[in-house]
Image (cartoon, rainbow, N blue to C red; front, side, top):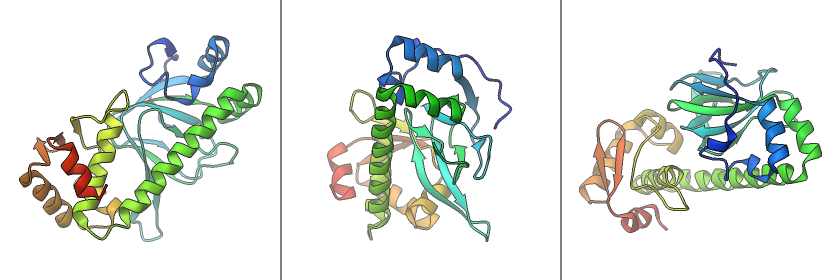
Length: 234
């Protein structure tokens, strides 16, 4: 785990309190969970846990973005999932995690010892239900990502990824109009099965068509949400 100093949880002021798995707990259960957990900050590029790490805890992402990645024998990284705020990480009921978890941006997480969290699930059925719901939601996102990667049109793939990040950055079921892309051009290319040059051309085309605007190296402004949905094939 990272050497970042851990802090006690402040559940009352947590921005994902009503979306994360802990939303299924009553006040007493929430207090119990808070006692076993710790809040940590991770800098962009910092490893949260590695594949095969026997000390791994499960974690809820409070803010930022995290990638789950596998590294092949040739050293090539393959991003298998992007975790957004309120997402749950760590393989519960498994001895070790199957992928590396790396902060894409400066991120904040609530970390829990896996064994303690599993025991708490056994005593709190609503927590178990929320974990299942969150797992199914993440599975839906994985299916969406697989569908996105399967698109033959590069512009549609890039537009779909931008739309997904806009939804993750939004609030109250509304997508954000302005946000920072957590992925580099190279990471976007690797995730979507494209080249960096193709990703850059697709972004430029979306900008020229008035679908998005770009501010700085990572800033994205969604200027036409309907056109963005049409570009991704919705």
